[in-house]
Length: 219
Image (cartoon, rainbow, N blue to C red; front, top):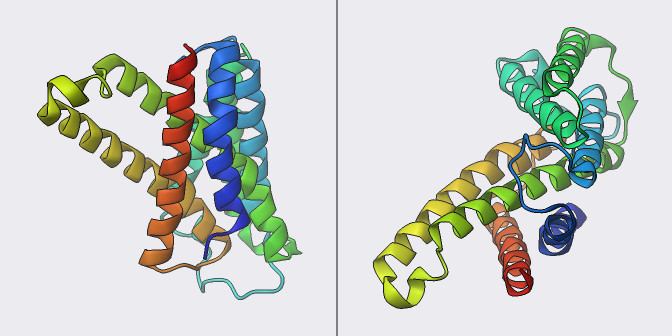
């Protein structure tokens, strides 16, 4: 039910993301001078592209591969944006990163009939760095929103505002998780029912909350 990827993602947002924020400071996705974040995001994009460029050798795939369907556009767009943020973190030109990843995605989409076959376990492993990168970006976004709106401080003096702020964060993280964690993993293998993914999402939220709590205690 809960896979290795889920534990790795929860551990990353619980420990690595706040540690990166302490070392490099909290910043937006396109801020420069963040080599640790930049390296993780670049590795994630490269791994995701490699995953998309392969097919399953030991499991059946859908009749129409995702990269040969209408969903290819949004997937390429998300990866290109992630490539831009990785270049920004490495103090390189974000448009260059966007263009390189976008071009690579288009090449993969038009060559779906020539993908090499690899085991599902290998494709899942290729996606892990991208999941870490996506989790780190979400952690930074949640920390920025929580800090700007003082969500925790509203608990005692304004319970209604606290509930509203918590709800906004829940919607934000839920939508983000669906787009950048759930959807990419479905590319490799269509698995997991609603209950399974709710448990996995709860583990992710627990990791984010733990990372935010000890980060806030130190800064």
